[in-house]
Image 1 (cartoon, helix red, strand yellow):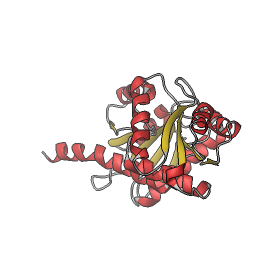
Image 2 (image 1 turned 45 degrees about the horizontal axis):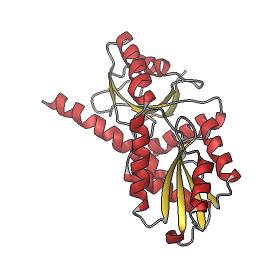
Image 3 (image 1 turned 90 degrees about the vertical axis):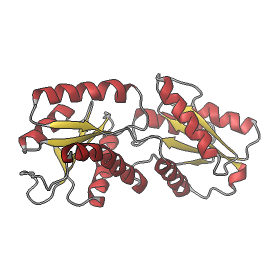
Length: 265
């Protein structure tokens, strides 16, 4: 059974006046906090766009699966939908896993046309969400004497690592003493190593900003590393930040616009 985030009157009989539903595809985790956080975010997306049907699916561990969610849309008479990978970078899941499962699902349901939105990052809205979470974690004091560790999950894909490094460079321009990337897996440095390196360079105050959406195994590793190394401030995960919800809708609109132009031609 698909976990329906929002529905409008008559959603089971979609017509030409209804916007294409949004199917948000998250990675999934054995940690129940992951699915709860993802669903809180998609509820926020739904609340920000009344009339838009928003569904949630997972690649692994959690339900519904992507094929289950796609079948439920088709069973409801949906003819077009937007699949949005809930990912911060274009790495293996965005390039391989999600396209494969969507191709397989679409092949079994030729009446349903699926278009895929871009991944979330990079975006200024993500920087704004990071700033929000840091501010919620505690008083930051003077930016010029505060270093930030931008801690991501990590990936073996060099494109993903390059994006994280570029985000750190861009964020540094907002006045922080330093912004250093760190990774919970696949790449180095680890969060604790980045914190210790900043401390060794004489940075007086160090904040760790997890560049992850929901809790789970790797985010917990970030948290442990930050605490073990004595970070002064540890921000929560991005979660259902309003900036993140706005970004999902932006990616949805970007995906829908070309399809609407094709239909109008």
